Length: 467
Image 1 (cartoon, helix red, strand yellow):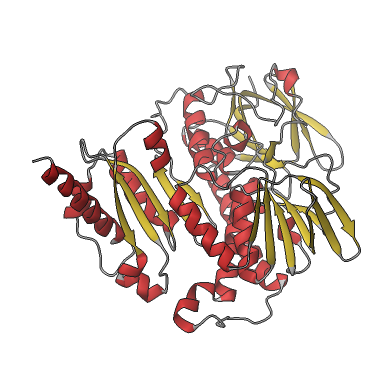
Image 2 (cartoon, rainbow, N blue to C red):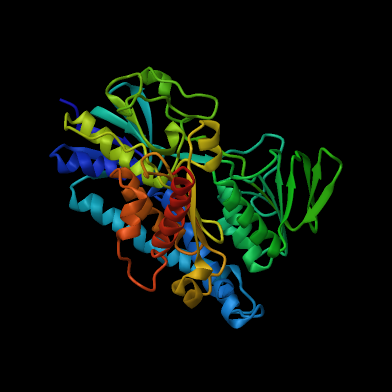
């Protein structure tokens, strides 16, 4: 008889939910993670600290209040790294406590250390002091997450040349910063440091940024960041990064040279699978360390599952949680609904971006007719109250059956607001539901009604012309 019904490698969002779901079904469950990493990358170097840092930046710089109190408004004049990390450490400590409590309450055994496969059902646990112990399990869930990808040609030192993990441990707020890569992580940090007053230059080899987002919203973000003195170098590739006593020099293939205090690489993520000895379990990872799974999150070895960032797109904490739960239910023979195809995406730039469904470009490409309804925060009483005159909500509506094809939001509270649109879309609702609904006033949620009225007025014009 194996030691456990389920052994989970990694205690991040995916691993936690898999372990707790199986434990609630009465199974004997264990979780393995390094002693300093309970809660995983998400809690220690990813989602939680970066979003907490963002909140600290917004609060201390007073950036969101400047429309009301003037451009010179700041809560604190000289913001130090200690000011920023105080909030992060507080939240991290509380969250680690919550994770530990949840695992304990559900009688999940915790092993501190690392795990590697000996065979398909046996894992060797490396503990402090170098000792190993063997643990057997009927099912294994791999939820080891990812680390920042590091190009071999770059000499990272954690002080002048950083990856996204090192950003949280910098000694001081840099006066100037080059960010290589205009993906989600790169743009989130670009907007935070720009808000702090750093002179930020973003270098991206592609022609644009955040290409999964609505074009109008990306343009709005670009405008805001340029307003904060961010410089964009699109279509440019970094040839070399030179370290100097006074900082770093980024040399582009075009010949441009950009001096800065700090260079941060945001070059994607690499799956944490190289120490797992996957081949001993009959598994393999691709060049980016990712493991292939089926719709039930099973690997090619049926009793071994993989969830979270280690399986690739969409690599979000929210989807990892759902994948972990679904994998545990499937392993335990419990019926589980398929994850809904409508996945909200939240990008914590300043201002926030969030969307669900398709973009205008996607609909045009697919030759799907749509009408647009827009609400701008400056038209809402709540927008004026909070001092956000730039936010907007956009609805894409089908003229054929009046259902929502996409919802795109930019501005304060975007990542919260999007769930209203997600719910309406998920339940097959129409734009008329939003027209007839009563929203609290004054709220940002009222933007749904304003945008819905805008869309239905346009649809009415279409109908009248065709009469």
